Amino acid sequence: MLRYVITRTHLLTTLLLLCLGSTLIADDAPVVKQLTYRQTPQAELKLHVHYPPNWKATDTRPAIVFFFGGGWNGGKVEQFERQAAYLASRGMVAARADYRVKTRHNVEPDECVRDAQSAVRYLRQHAAELGIDPQRIVASGGSAGGHLAATCGISPPLKVDDANASVSCAANAFVLFNPALNVASIPQAVERLHNDVALAKQISPTLHVTKQTPPVIMFFGTDDKLISHGEEFVNAAKPLGIRVELVTTASQAHGFFNKSPYTEQTLLQVDKFLVSLGYLSGAPTIKVP
Image (cartoon, rainbow, N blue to C red; front, side, top):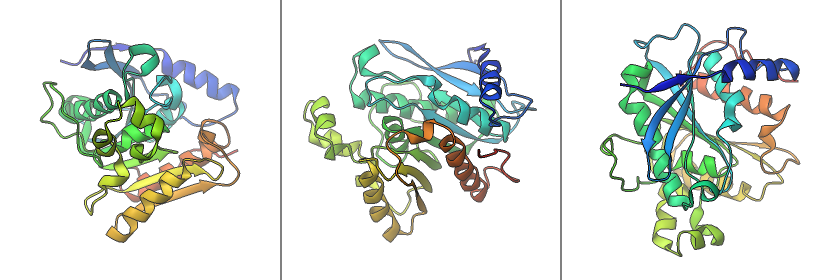
């Protein structure tokens, strides 16, 4: 059975966006529930799930799961609240995943990856109860969270002893905001993995691109040093015929998508991308300032 508690997050989101003069979500704001997706020695990990209006457990809707950024050190599960609320208003089941980080749980990036992969497994395993299509799951996130999303199906899965370890953690599409895609090229990250170069390579999505890699859209500001990760990924993917879109915004730095009007601009592109995959239908409802 699913365990959950109803939250007031959707109400707070509505009030915040009205104050900002934004129209990210419909008037009929979706309900948000918390579901426990993994039990770890350090914490019980939750998914904050935004259900669309008129949702039913018998639905087979597309789903998206967001992972917050923070360098695998910190960050807050609230980061992608606006994006999740908007996509739920468009008909998706949209989840925001909490996961372990260094400052709160004293874990390194590989444990963050295990949590992310477990979150996707949970969605697929419980698809019938969540009203989602297990073959239309999108992984998304920003910075380190974008890295975690990309490890859910591009990188090979890490070993876990979870009860659902046999369930696939491979997402069917990716929406990535300035992601780190080659951990092996980041000395600080390799050091945090106790200089285990093989492990760093295993969790570096760019090094595992194949003809079977699902469609990807990614967003970078041109002033972001991590844009080289996006370019490297595109160079690996394009020759294989993979659909990959690199969307850049001039003169913007890391994390630009967190503020208006870039939140709305990137969401508009995400909406169009998901429509092209058949995950959404109709015209976007978001208004870009």
